[in-house]
Image (cartoon, rainbow, N blue to C red):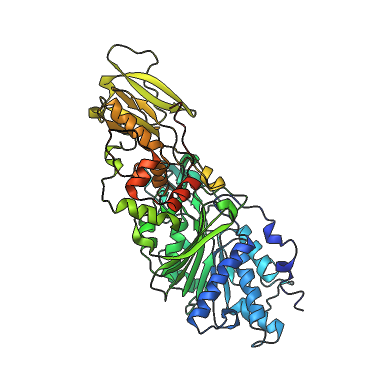
Length: 547
């Protein structure tokens, strides 16, 4: 075997791993360039902590990708070690065999990705195959393991009578959820022979014991790196359940010296069930580097990831600020040393911090004190218990159906929740904002156009609303809402298209006795020319002529 033959796959033009289609939006292949950037971070951190030494020249360092798909991380690690150890282990065959049997390990997420990863790393889908570049393995898996698992269903409320494998009658739940990952039994209890997406790394109560079973009792990984599955489809597919945070927390249980992962960025300010994970991440002073792409297409061109993507490096020996880098439209902002837990969510672009601090230091109450909660009147967006022709005593009901705004009428007696708000003047604001415009172009409206609703009135879940006593006050709020300043502050907490109650937290209350303009607000909060230019470079003006 020669240097030209060994690992020639990674040097082909084009690299075969850049040509593979993603399995889905849940299981996203990592571009080789991104894997290389993440490994560079690991190497730099290692050198800084070890007097400039090169991690790739150390034959004792161990690496794990616990959710390998294409094998791109393991392949790049192997290639770097092969070059770095050429003086310590001059014989190429011996060197490669040592690297693949003693240093590089993986856990695949499916049978298909197991074979693909082995092909990328061993040059054979079987570690002990004829064409494998590793000659010491006696089994098919080598150090890239996969075994089909089942979810652990619990909490079912519906049951069927069936039989076990021996023909004995059993009562089986059909609508539970997995106790490990929260997967829906209705969606993923698919029967024998079909992919269950029960990932081995997070389907265990004791990951250390599981790793010992797979790779040996004394195995301690220095570096854990990879790109975990992001989400599982929920019932009906309307709200996908994030699972990537389970992989991060599980990896930390193995106490690696370095942990690097690429994950969606939604955790920074939102995400279903991610509040605890966000708090943990923001308070973790071991996170050394965080690189954020608000437009995920800059790293994953063929996959739509709402809210962007990021990767981080956690260094167990680091205790201090995190270097945060934002990459948008090919432009890099940072790195800037920051305390991630300055606020309850992460302000992604460091240029926004000085503006936000100027606003918050005044200590004014938040405008969300006059903002209704989600589904304030109790009706979902598909509520249709209203009529089109107004009857005596009816109140107006506003809704959005098929992306079109409409107005119907409902008897006052049908309003059984928050009835005290019926007789207020309202500024209705769509709960779904401007979508992913800012991700693509860097400039955004942030929020949809508002609608003044006279008293008495109600609305469905499609709208949130500000409520006040008079039309003049509502129109003052409307002018404030339309300013770039207002929508900029909302944008700092709005990471997806949903504009929830909490996204308005940093918008301060104002006196509702005037028409507000950006000039007024810039002067009030001391926003200088450079800061004004920044706001206006990312927030589009809002036309209220039709609102």
